[in-house]
Image 1 (cartoon, rainbow over the protein chains, first blue to last red):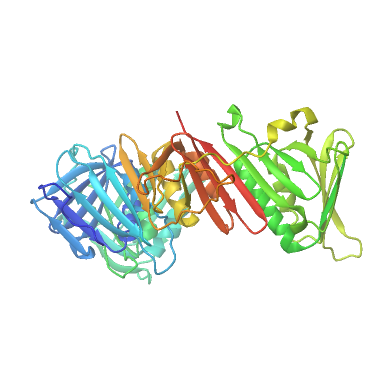
Image 2: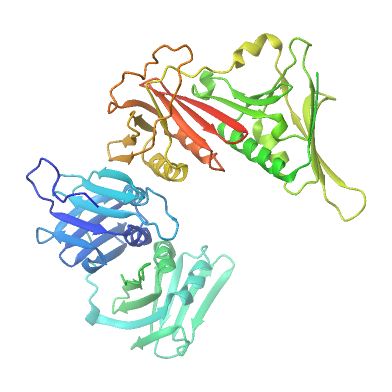
Length: 264
Length: 284
């Protein structure tokens, strides 16, 4: 794309420049965490992290490594800003969400620093769209302090196994109860709704389960409304890891393979 | 006043249905004008429509196998009806695999367009589904309200970009703003812009081409002698533009727009046998 990194007539460089040949690599991932209007973007030399939080009870992070981008340069140690995620997604998908195979939207994202808007340059088929999105003061984000070393139970399974289960969850139940145990029932999802209680058991030796490391029997209940947004991420992913720590904190990690086969 | 028409050819029927579907998306109520050779769907520019007006013209010979009409009087051999195009669209939906469709103007209890759809059936007698669409007969004294709009004295005339791209862009922009600025120049460049407190987005189209307009009386139109790079612009209601683009089910043979700076944008969409003109006024 014949667009230079430096804005014409200005001596100030951009603190963040990121280029993608296919903007869908970014937009599909961001859609997976799009359950609130606002998100905090955090860029380091490693890549871009986008965090969405709800009521200080649930936090979703989308991480796109620097290697996924065709060009990724961060001038300072870290660059942080808060932005309207709905607006960002509308801009990234300005040429439509589905396109003919072989055509893709090229993206150049530039940020000049604190107080400046985020600039997006998108191009598809010779048509260029320029977006200027205002950024805001980054907010205090919760640090859940979920440490991988303190994980008590961990199960990795193929997403298709969970997708149907999540789609059919009894939403009249206020909670989703997750049981993970080295003994029976191994891995159980339970709901308690108006019609009664429903239990979904996964056998330990199921083909869908890739890794099973349960040390303790744990049964935890989570507000089902907080888990519903995660179905978007589940829909996009190929694998999911479910981990809990001693306090019953739940961490769900989704492995997403993009159109070019890269992993996010 | 009499009117009866019949379509037997399936391709013509589908084509006609598509036209009616497009009209239904653009207007809740409109005027259907019938003459011996043509049909017109007209929306006059009343305040209730938000100042938008529409003129759609079809040659009846290209659609109907039989077409007979008798107007209000010999010297005024035309019929003007007020109807809701959505009703006609829904009636035609049942005709997707019909053997024939007959349309007739009736007045049993109140004036109606009776659409009789003959459907294929396994038995020897055919199945007929009849829809009665209430219409209002517009008296001759009001016919002047529905004259063909003249092409405005535009500043710039330009071909539209690929409608699919324009549609996607406008749909996204509709999420971000209520109004959109459409600007174009005589060098084939068009920009669509929105600007709000949160965001500003501009899409640039190039190499669109400017249609040649022969001036009728040989005089200079206001677009001649104009600087080629200078943009004519108008801010319009984005929903109206989106409705126009969303209603296009088939790519037109020619699509262009005429911009009168800060006043009105005149869209012309031409298909082989249908022409559609749509006027969107600029916002204050």
